[in-house]
Amino acid sequence: MAGKPAGERLVFRLAEAADSELAAHDLRRAGLGQLYLPTGRLLICDPTPGMSDSEPLERAVAPGRYLVSAFAHEDRNAFALLRFSTERIARWETAPIELIVDGGEPSRYSGGCIVDSGFAGFMDMETHNLIDLRDNAEQDDNPDYEGYIFDALLESFFDEEAGLHCPIKGDPRNVAAFTSGYGDGEYPAFWGLDAADSPVLLLCDFLVIERS
Image 1: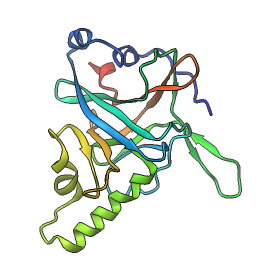
Image 2: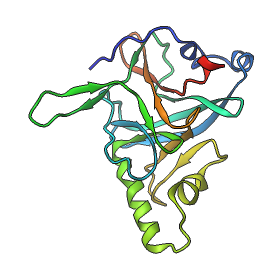
Image 3: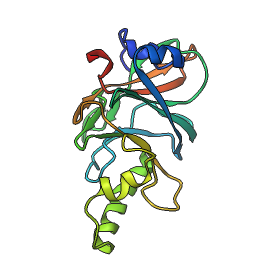
């Protein structure tokens, strides 16, 4: 169930840095609140309708509520992370997705998050279908509905760069969503693991740090 060892990246150090070191790299930390994971099977994907082919990460975590943070450099999100414990990180590895091939052996894809709307997100696999349910309901019942991003997703953000979003009002299953660095593309994801090989952090790197 292990991903490939990850090479050295500045973003790994910054994920655990104090605010003073973040400021030296022109980074700002925004705490978004708690993401609810009822099953512990995680998706990192575009949090908009029509992305129903997304698959959960191969490594699962214990069900629960976990803190999410986004880190911005100038006017772009540089990376986002989901924290599971306060243990020290002993190593980093890629966060592969398990793809089941009909009639064959499971294959593993470690490409990270594929973005087609300018937004990336963390969510539980149980939450995923709620996005399409909300979109379909809005199209059926709301004559003023112009699209999911502006009429559903952004309405729950504290700014236009990142926030927590409940697809179904009154349902605690939520999505942590953030604008994705330089926009659409494919962004790598990594597990930060402690000495016992348990997850400390899940990080999605929007590849802003290496270009700054």
